[in-house]
Amino acid sequence: MILNLALVIVTLSTLLVAARVLRGPSWGDRIMAFDFLSVNLIVLIVLIAVKTRLLVLLDAALVLSLLGFLTTVALTRYLLTGRVMR
Amino acid sequence: MRGLALNLLLAVTWALFAGQVAVRELLVGFLVGFGILALFPRALGSAGYVRRSVATLRFTGFFLKELSLANVQVALLALRPRPPLNPMIVAYPMRLEGETAQTLLAATITLMPGTVAMGFDDERRVLYAHAIGLPGAAEARDSIRRVEDALLPVLTRRATPEVHP
Amino acid sequence: MNDFSPLRDIPILIGSFFVLTAAVGVLRFPDLYSRLHASSKLVTLGSAGIFLGAALELTEAAAFTRLAAILLFQFLTTPLSAYLIAQAAYLRALPPRLSGPDEWNQLGRHPQPGDEPPREDPAD
Image (cartoon, rainbow over all chains, first blue to last red):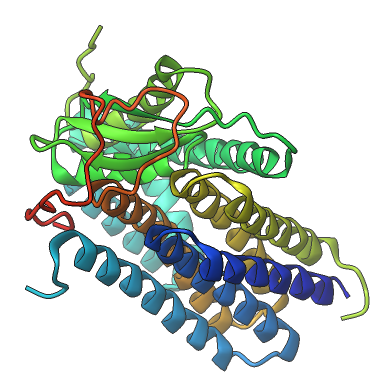
């Protein structure tokens, strides 16, 4: 019951952040909102894992958290230095 | 880290004497070993280790308290109809030296009430931070200074950190 | 899962409340740098609450270690990505909307879009 309520709340916040990704007046807002969107999705996946009792989903959440951070690092590095790799 | 090695050795010894090397025995042994190291700092040469461990624990407590405060503050700002944000960018001359210490400071103030680290100057002496919800630049600097005060004994090996005016 | 168990449900409720407030802040705050406050601070405690509740509900050791790893990683990376985004945005001339002083730029001139971006490596 509480779990369903939490799922609804987190889904709502994911939609709000997605609105910020689409609207975000500057590229900085989009990067920030995209980073935050990945965190929201991690929380959502963890809640779904609790609801369905599928522990495999926790691995997906772990991979998504790594990917979200790497995306932010790569994008900001590209914008600051003009390339991602040395 | 000679003190930490000694403490781990004591934990393993305790677990062996207890007859079972499991998480619970190791944990008890670690605590008992820490007590021994704290009781005989001269003989075991563990004064620095004990002091830094206590400082780390106190910093963790400070961090959790301030993190909760920061969350409540930003949540109130986000839900209020007309949030008094008062955004500004302040420069803070750091006392900490070294890349690790400064990165730790920048990461910590990002999670503290009111401030987000934005960058360093070229000589890495000054930290620039964005502040909201604080009345003025002096308060923002005070907030960063409190974090640095809690962080200094964790990262320095000296017995007493030197006092700056 | 029908009964109310406070040990599991209260952290999850607090956590999801903070996640929602963070999203509201990201949507409502006036400029990028203020939005970073909402997205970096609120989400650490929010996800910590939800992960704690999840760990108390899924009692397996495998679930516990994975949740602890995700939580530790979140605590390490959230301030770092906020720092990287703020630095990149400021140095690539996204103007902040300030009512106080800007002490990074004492001359009162913000970086302009035509400026040469700094070539030193900010990540290391």
